[in-house]
Length: 341
Ligand code: PB1
Image (cartoon, rainbow, N blue to C red; front, side, top):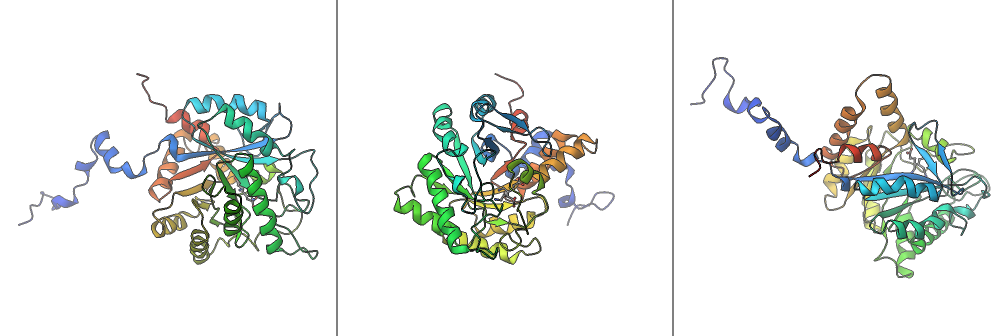
């Protein structure tokens, strides 16, 4: 006999008994908890070692020279920052069809790595690997003379750049180029140079030809000189290609997987995490998502901290293990223990 209340609410339909105090509510959300280990902080690094260049399209975000980056990171590391993702931005070094300065000795990332590792020995440093910030045409690979993508030449160049960052001290190389076979090409070079057991490969596994990269392209000065990236970034309409990309990158040796952007792709996030539960799943809350959330909160649409935490918890609930986000400094403040012991 099922006991019924006077309004016939069956006892197993009573949810309020699971949420009437904060502890009960916390227990319902353990799978979406946030710690400092769940975050990676993207950083723009310029040649001028003493520069701080605010980025108009990304309020609150600046490009840094290495000396100013040290000052910026120090308090964040004290608050528990675990990982950063470096993007080099060049102003004076020339850009050419081969993206020569992607890994030249004058490249700001190559120059910064040894210093950052000395200053912050416990910080995990990932380097984005792509040609677009360094190529004259602004595309992510090497092109044929007719302007179409030369995938083979791109693999050779991109794996060279990844190797250079690994040799300069990167803990993780993160190819965002979306060339076919770049994970295997990078892994092969790391193995050949006896670095495969010391450097992780974070694949931008399911990276879509999104409308939400605009502010980044301002920040990194990496807008394509012509055309777009739809012939090598995944079509936003496709889930199947994302699965095929994940299967491919896992088989080619990726250590870490990623979905990017994330807010419009949480179905993809859940699918890939469910299919590969034993791989750390990264998501990239990209520049357009950052700017959208920031500006909406500035417009009074919602409270930034409360709205951001709601979004971050939803990403964790959908399967994200690590969130790459420009909000990392704010999040570190929000994660500080309320009462210092
Ligand atoms: O925050 C962002 O918008 C990230 C943009 C991203 C960086 N990995 C790429 C997107 C793009 O410009 O197509 C850069 C491609 N290498």
